[in-house]
Amino acid sequence: NGSYLGIADGNLSRKFQQSFEYAKNGNLISKRIHDPASGNISDEWSYVYSNHQVTNIDSSKSGTDAFVMQYDANGNLTRQRDNVKDLTKRIQVDSQDRITQIQDVNNAILGSYWYDEGGFRIRKSSLEPKNNVFSNVEILYPSKFFGLEFIESENILTSVNNVYLNGVRIAALNEAGALAYYLTDQVDSVSHVLDDEGNTLSLMQYLPYGETFVQRGDLNFSPKFNSQELDRESGFFFFNARYYDPGIARFTSADTIVDGELDTQGWNRFSYVKGNPIGAKDPTGHLGESQFVDKAAKVPLNKILEEATKKTSEKAAENSGKVFSKVAGKATGALGFLVPSEVDAPTKKPSTDNRKDPKLPIYHRLESPTQTSKTAKMQEQSGEIWGKEAQGGLYKYVKAYKGPLPKGSRGIEFITAAPESGGALPKEARWIEGAPGVRPANNPDYVKINVRVTKNTQTEK
Image 1 (tube, one colour):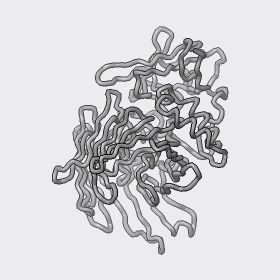
Image 2: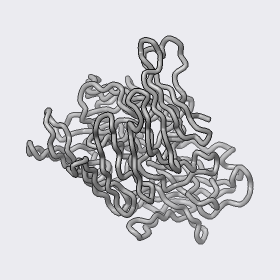
Image 3: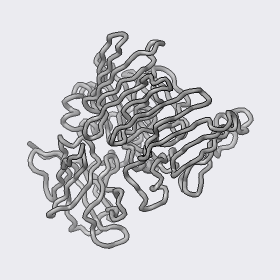
Image 4: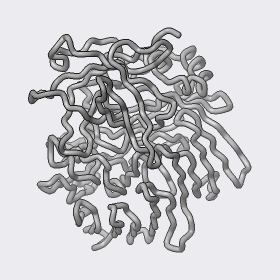
């Protein structure tokens, strides 16, 4: 069923090995850590659940209740006790189930977090180790393309411009002009960080569910497992829609999208990528995506950066124009990334499987300066499709047209076809950023539409 069970490679597994066991409903029920020399089990974690929520984890090495978790009525993790390390995290959430503050057992604040009306994290205040001492660090996120960090004890303010491709951060430029390139694996986890000359600044390896296995060099680069940001004060990864705890391999809150159309694991709203961390990723905190290597293509670095420049929004270009020009000038084809084949050929025509009727209309989904989140409800109204998402109790719209784009507009061209099972085209579905096409929302009446993005488009002004 795609769940990761462990390594099956003979003597190579002696270097390091973890193995896992799952219940019939897909819940992870056992994690085993093996001795590197003998291969014997040195520790086994047993998971105890209540309605898909992990309440207790017992350890064969450390005893019962090694971890104890508590949740509120909405399914948000509110308290986590690590009895082995004698650590307690008390977690506060807002009315939209977003973590706003984390405290220790003595009510000392470890981290505080603020969000805009669309759920984008705009500010973080935390205690972090800087130069061997704990300092209060303030981070502001005016956009995902630009960030500011202030270290209070040293009175230092720094900035960084980020470069994204297909939703993944691939490079960054600080205010001193130093470049960092992020090299990722098949699930977009950053394994190497390189400078302009190809020297290694940081080296990272992860255990299957995201725990850090090896980390050398500079520890301060933001993107790590799944290219997500690690909050060191809590040990949680911020996955945009919610937070993920790699230590227990579970999200700290329930998914707001129930993807139970094709398999029962879609109803497990706390699991990470349905138990398949080796072959799937989760760029948004909703609905993990398969990302197998045979569906990817090697692309030279200069081609990637060229596509990134074309596809990044006007706002990114404004904030990161210096990054693009400098990166493009220095890039060579010596390095490669694993990226979806659609990136390699953005003008590729859709397959006949996805376009069964050549007379189907072509739609263009427009960019919108008011839509901070790219996850939207797509609802057909009067022959057009609209994207709709609740933001702070209000609805903001992203319009998608049939036919050509209005002059001066930017958008994504796509087509629709009837479901594989036949029948009429549904009137409502779900658009998820990072997963080209339309996905079902948390409503059993929604049906998945066959959609293929044909290209990113921009008309001349």
